[in-house]
Image 1 (cartoon, rainbow, N blue to C red):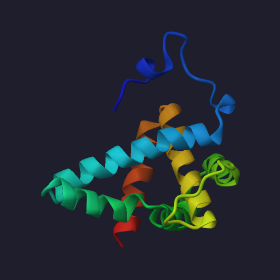
Image 2 (cartoon, rainbow, N blue to C red):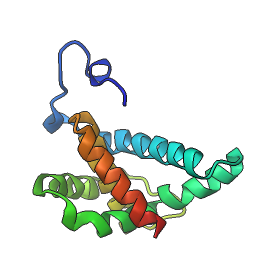
Image 3 (cartoon, rainbow, N blue to C red):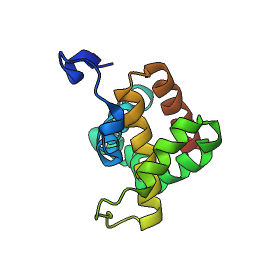
Length: 138
């Protein structure tokens, strides 16, 4: 994993209560994308096009929305609150291949991942990522 000190700088930890849920989702989106790409490269291999097509099954809004619904009961109350904050944040943007509800739940999922990363809860983050990919794979 990336060294948190490199991200947070010499001042120490970022005050997570000051970060917008959309900022957390911005970080979480990157975390999930890299995790999926590495997982697929290790597990199925193949060319870039094949990997990209497989990755979209996991990272599209509808898949992330399904995942957060499937794992929601396994989250702590604090984690559920982060998901709700992310879901309720209005970015003013919805991708062309997603509906608003799916997009908002996907944003909540990504906010959770970003929160766990920024909090340096790497074991919990890895657990959630594994759980999410198991649910997404069927």
